[in-house]
Length: 195
Image (cartoon, rainbow, N blue to C red; front, side, top):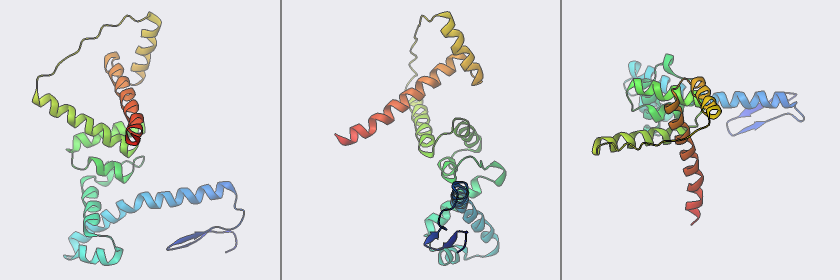
């Protein structure tokens, strides 16, 4: 083991005093393999579907993963063709959206990628959106009119920010308030759990 990492199934051995950039490179490689493995298994199973009638039995034997986990990998891989997969987002991001229609999947993937949402943030926003749609179906929408007096330079700064986000001012204000509300509620959750 002179100067290179050695991997085994249950361990990683690193040489003494490797440079920071080499240690970082190794970490990135491990992360890419980890993030890619669910896609690879899903694609492997899809291929097996056309070639081998007992693919799940074989896959369970080969991987020691349970049937449901393997089915989920294949389902998500099938729902997102290779050209629609986003490299900047994890397999779990895609799994959160797999049950949605394709157009909604792409819309949510665009947002998650643009705003760098974690999988949990994406999950929360999709849930809030679904709840809002269900509530809108149940009762007539109540609209709250808010009037604000804003200094001209502040309004101009807000309009510039909205334009840079490719939104009109009202949509931008609502999205900023929604983001702030979500962050506040998420911060409050751990405190509630302690009570």
